[in-house]
Image (cartoon, rainbow, N blue to C red; front, side, top):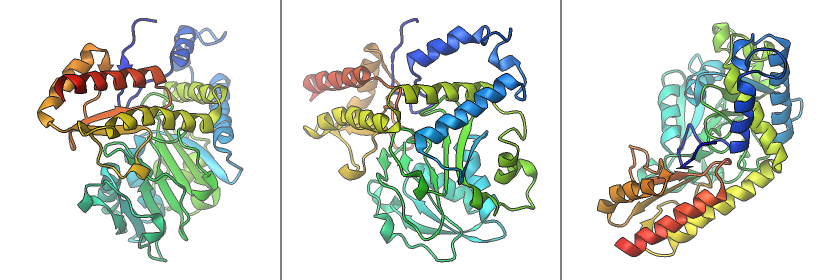
Length: 360
C-alpha cells in the first residue's frame, strides 16, 4: 500500500489497512462469481449472504436479543432527524429533546418542524461544555420519547453512561457506536452513520425495538417507515451495497480484535495520551468537563489563537492531517476512531510537545 498520512478526519474517517487490503483484493472479482460486489443485484444470494453476516455480527458485538431489529438504511444521521419524529411523534405529539451540542441542535431544528417538541435539557448557554446528569432532565410523562446525541463530535463531549428513562430513549451514536461498551437493552432506538467507525459514507445502522416499530405512523409513504424497511429486511429499495459490504468487513475486524470492550479500552488509552499533554500546562486548552470528555474527538485550542494556523500548517509537514476544528467552533480537533492506530496519536502528541517548546 502507498504511503498513508496520519488521518484525524472527523468523517468520512480512516479505515484499518487490513480491511482496505481485503477490499482491494476482492474488488476486481468477489470470490468466484466473476463480478465485483458493486456489479451484482442486492437480491442476489451472494449479497444476501453478506447482508445476513453483517447483521449477525452486529448482534454479537452489541449482544442484541431477538427483541431488536437491525436495519441498514440510507440518508445518514441527518435523515433520521426527520424520520424519527415523522414515525413516532407526528400529528403534533410531544417529544423531549436534549440540546447538548451541535448535532443535538440540528436534530432539534428538524424535529421542531414536525412534532410538539420540548427541550428537556440545554447546555447551550454554557457553550456545550458540561451536560447535566440525565436524572435532572425535565421530561414530560406524555412524551413519546427522549432524544439526544451520545457523543458530540464538534464539541468533543459525551454522555459516558447509559440512560434510564420512563419513556423510550432515542440516541444518535454516529461517532461512538462500537467504541463504547453500552448496555443495548437500555436503549429503544439507536442510529449511527457509517463514516465514523464502520465504513464509508452512504449507509446508516438502525437498532430498534420490534415493539417500538409497531408504532410507526401508518399514513407515511412506505419509504419513510421504519417498520416497512424492517419487513423487507432493509431491501425495500436498492441499498448502498458497497457501503454495506465494507461495514460487514469492519464488523468482522472488530470481532477479530477483541470486540467492543477492547475498542473502548483502546479509545480511552489513545485519547488519554492527548488529554494528559493538554492538561500538563496552559499552552493547550480543552474546555470540556473532564468526566464528559469524548474518547473519539479530542478538541483543543492554543492559548495564543494566532498560532493555530501555524500549528495546522506545521502539522501537515509531519503528515498529521485534518486537525482543523469544525468551522462553527474553530480550534483543533483530533478524531481518533477505532481504526486509528496508537502510533498516530503518539505522533500527534510528540508534535504538540515540540510545537509548545518552540512557541510556548
